[in-house]
Image (cartoon, rainbow, N blue to C red; front, top):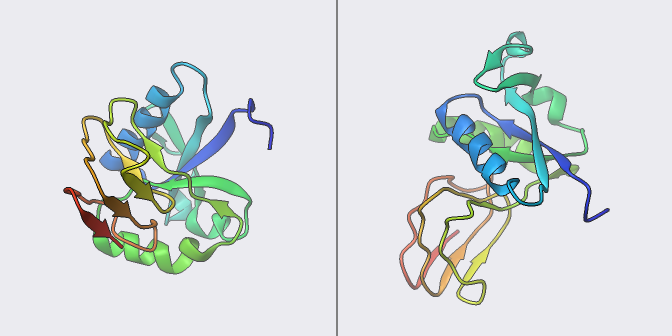
Length: 150
């Protein structure tokens, strides 16, 4: 992979949390962009083309099952997260990066992440924290010191 290449990123979901994730990606891209929001991915193919905020729905879940792409969850409802974990979560060709807003306070020697985690603006992660992978696990977590979120 070319380290200087801006990569398209697909956001599963199109509600409020998905729009917040899109804003987070834009904040990450302020200096030297790594990702560009390609668009939202919804469960209903009839939504494709619909404009939501500054982005459009560009695919449905089924379209992503064997696509090579970078993806992140923008879902807040546990049932939707579980459904996605059962469908797209195991798609071998989807890459799930960790996205941390630039304002997040954390230390790489005190906090470890699995893959696909989204940490929004203002979060403070202190010490001895292990956060597992999404979408296999819950999206919303409020870690404290000395904890594990599987």
